[in-house]
Length: 559
Image 1 (cartoon, rainbow, N blue to C red):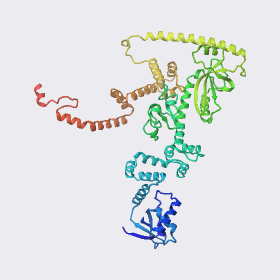
Image 2: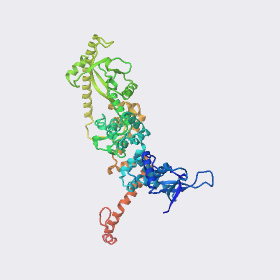
Image 3: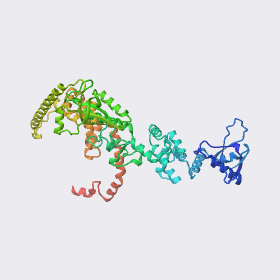
Image 4: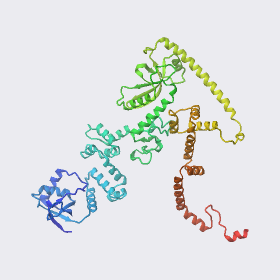
């Protein structure tokens, strides 16, 4: 290919070139070498239309490969007519861009951000990550990570370019949203360099281990309050498909939530259910301390450096109508005796301790615990006479409650015996209103959290009697509850072939179009996977059930 000398004034850099940074010292060194030895490798250009308004103006050339050499020669040029050796090639935009990308990515000192930009541009122009990886000798994971690097906020991009942040740290932080990236930048602004370890520690501080959460290890592992999604189905759970933090994927106890706001919402919603369980006994807003009741107490450490979460939760509690007492104003230290310990019972009876639900926070984590705080006898408005009288009242009330509970239990056991007869004795009459009420009540009692919450509000520990009372007053909700129970049942039998008849019967009524789509997809899949096998069996003289196909002659002989 012929090399031509073109005046430097007719050559211009390409705006498509992904390389944006050039070291001035290196350029000066290169310019000196060119001055002494000449340009050993000509630059590659392509002709482009002139932007000059003069139709007689000379045509222009755009640099495809060799902008660094062009910049060095510009330092030596004594005018626009300074000659630059060039290879001239006619190229489309796509061909030129492809050549620029190839040249830049084959450099040994390629800038990570320029590499990220180049990979992203290739992907936008239709190349798959597999194609890019194969073309440049990289792994697909490397290409994906580099593309994600484009998500760095400008502040961190500058720190990476300036060498103040390692590439491994940038690869971890770029997967966070903009707000968290800026929080990271602010936290480590005074660091001369930011390492991968700094980035990982930051991520560990905001991504919570689900195994440490109150709901995940208890009976409500699939609690979906607050954020509306079960952890087992959530895309922000690192053990689920779709987690961008592939290096954090793990099994079981290593699962982490990568969405700080959703984790906080779920945690506070769960803590709220722990308080709502005792709704009937909790002292309400504006009411004084009363023995035999439960006080919600804010016990906040002086070491709390971020009160936003604790204040938000206290606001939620007060919005429910509960009084929140300040621990230091009404109570002293708490008793270390556990519930059921006779010594604790004695302290309760003597009003030495008060049963409380303690909202406590240390550092920034909020919890709710049952505590038995020592009562301040010098509390304003409460004298010793009141304490003694209250102690006697509380003791008698507790005895009355235990006696009543025992009688109720005996009554329930006796009534249960009535239903001990054989199922064959049940009549076949249509269900009565009472039977439907009781059925719906028990279905509601065992419904999922969303249904109970929608119907009952504070639904965490509603008794069967409370559900029955709700149904008798809201019979218009009965069919909805029964259908939701039915929906849950049909959802749970998914993947079990024995549940197909029931599933399809109800789906035909509820969602006929969706059922048709599923059935058609099933028929197509069945045909694709079994047609070859069916033909092989048929050629061998057997049905798909493995039975011998009788010939017409043998069938006639039997007749």
